[in-house]
Length: 469
Image (cartoon, rainbow, N blue to C red; front, side):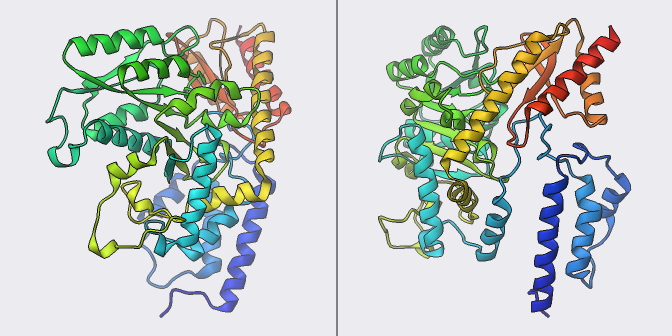
C-alpha cells in the first residue's frame, strides 16, 4: 500500500490541476458570484462514507469539479464587493503547492532554515513600511483577528510580568482595554479569550467621520483610574471594517505615552494602504504603536490564511511566548528566528512563501499600482453615488469601503436590493449600519474590478430605486 503517486498518476494530476487553474481563471468573471447551492450534493458530501477503495486522481478531480466548485462562492469575481476579501494573486496557487510539497514546520529553525529566513524577510519588509526599527519583529498568523489576540497577549505580559506564575487579574486592579465603537469584533473576542472580561472593555464614541474621539478616550481613562481600575491598552483602527475610517493615531499615541498605555493598531483591513502614496501620510504615526495587526491575505492578495503581527520590540513577543524544553533545544543563530518563541503554535505551516513569492514575482511597484487603483475605483463609486439623485453617501470615503443608501428606504428595502443584486448576478454587496441608519456597503478589494463593474452596480441599484418610486 502507498500514499504516493506513480509517474502516470503524477502526470495526470499535474495536467488536471493546470486545466482547473485555467478554467477557473477564464470563467471567474462570468460565473455566478453566489452559487445556487445544491443541497442534495452537499448533504451527500456529509453523509457518504469515505471509500475503502480510493476513487483515484481522475475521480478526485471529477468530484471537485462537479460537487465542490459549483457550490463555492466566487470570491475572485470582480463584483464580489460585500467583504474585505480579494482574490488570490496569480502566482499564489503555485507557491501554495510548493509549500505543501516541501512541508516545512516553521517552529524552530533547524526544521525550516530557509522558511525561517523567508518569514523574517517578509516580517522585516512589512515592519519597514510603518517605520519600525531594528528592534522590531513579528510573526505571520492565520489572520488579523489572531494577530490582535497575540498583540493583547503580549501587552498583558508586558503589563503583568508575573502573569505566567500568578494567573489573570490576581495581582492588581482590573485591567481595562479601550477601543472604538466602530472597532472589529475580534477585539472583544480577544478580551474574552484572555479572561480580561468584556466588562473591562470601553467602546469609545466616534466623531462624525466614525473615528475614535480622543477627548472621550481621555475621559474614559480618567474615570477608570478614579474608580481604581488599571487602564493598560488602547486599540486604534486604521480602516474600520464598516466605513474604512482611520482613527487619529497621532493624538491617540500622545495620550498613550502620557498615560503609559500599550497602543495596538488594528490594520487588518486598512493597514496595507500604506503602500499608496495618496493616503500614506495617514499612516505616518503608526511607527509609534507598540504593535500592529495586518492581513496580507487582503491587500497583498495572498490566499487564506495570511495575517501578521508586528511589534516595535520583538523581545516583548519572546517574553510572552517563549518556553524552554529539552526536546526542542536548538542552537541560536543570528540569521534565524525560532518562531515557536513568538506565538502559541509549535506546528506552523510555511505561510510566508506565498507572500514572498508574489512580492518576488510581481514586485512591490505592482502592488502599489493595484492598491492605488483600488482607491481610484472607490472614488469613482463615491462620485457615482453623489451624482445619482436616488442615492446618498452615509460616511466619508477614506479608503475603499463605500457606504451609501437609497434615499428614504428602510433596512428591509435595502436587504431586498442586496438579494436582487445577488440573484441576478449583478454584485454581492453587504449591509451598512452607521449612525442608526441602514444602507448598502461596497468594499473594493479586488484587482479584477473595473470602472465598468462599478458603473454596472450603480446603474442597476438606481434602476431598482427608480422602479420602486
